[in-house]
Length: 400
Ligand SMILES: Cc1cc2nc3c(=O)[nH]c(=O)nc-3n(C[C@H](O)[C@H](O)[C@H](O)COP(=O)(O)OP(=O)(O)OC[C@H]3O[C@@H](n4cnc5c(N)ncnc54)[C@H](O)[C@@H]3O)c2cc1C
Image 1 (tube, rainbow, N blue to C red):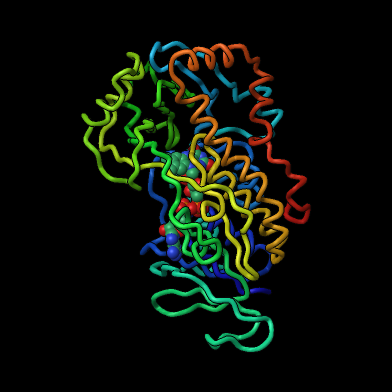
Image 2: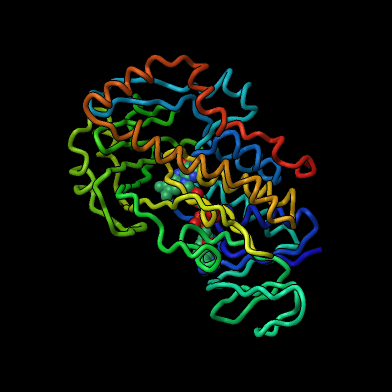
């Protein structure tokens, strides 16, 4: 039985805690915030996420509050015309073995938190910001005085000692800073505005059970139902060349409306319903090979922060957790199993932004004809590598 520290109690950190504890280990989660909570709006979960959630034992609880949508719908945001739709029922579910759903973040996080609280091997410690770590040599005692073959997670309250440390502390990870040292994240120059409104404010004829994406020149607007269908999640993004990192600042309603002057009528009407908007400037990082340092490994956004355009950051963090538990404590095999897939997802997310969501003029027209020409099977083939995680690569003993 190993003692493991996890820096960060987000979706990835809690999923990793469950996965490692299920292998019979003790886990302590050190969370910087003063409580364990996931704020924010909606999140899309593809079948690969449900596969992981089932393996973690919380799939049914997440399904209870999820909205199982019928289609990923792609609209031309300036003409208002439907370009294409990727069906998510029927053959999609048969092929991928799980639904595609949208949930409020809290409806994904709470089942993970409840499961951690119910497991006596997991300790949750809020108010503990990890600032770095120290590794002891496998022989002898280090200058820090810790036992050989151990790792110290450093915090302002003093060090925590364990056999292993997992850095699940997000895109600005202190564990990654110590291990990889690749500085601040890359600022994409894309600003996102987010709002969640009660569904009863939305005209009946616009209450679609789909994820809708309106694409325009250097902008796109996405909306979908969450909270069992009681709310509509709105997210409008603009490639405005922003250079400053911004996270969750309130922004005026008029400002958001004025940022999307070319929106066609229906999309404009939906955007106008939003209020209490908040804004972020989106960041990611280039994929790196270094995910481990002896007894320390990275997971989730700390390892592979990606733009949200493929809607896979949390889904792949859940996959990481399952794979890590399956091979634990072989951190190098975990990294080997995860690096290539998550790097591909990171690049795919950038590609989607550049090539599908934001083109203008002829490039937008070519995109529309290309998408309109794809059959249902073509569309499913395009997402198969991402949505149907090849579970053979999750070691069989991870499947319980
Ligand atoms: C606008 C937007 C939309 C998105 N939509 C989707 C989507 O539809 N589908 C999807 O799969 N993904 C989506 N994502 C990505 C997803 O939100 C992230 O990939 C996911 O939350 C990563 O989880 P994580 O636990 O690795 O990191 P985080 O969620 O960042 O959690 C890190 C945790 O660590 C804590 N922490 C930070 N530093 C320290 C420290 N030094 N010491 C201790 N604790 C620390 C933080 O407080 C936090 O609790 C979206 C992201 C954005 C920005």
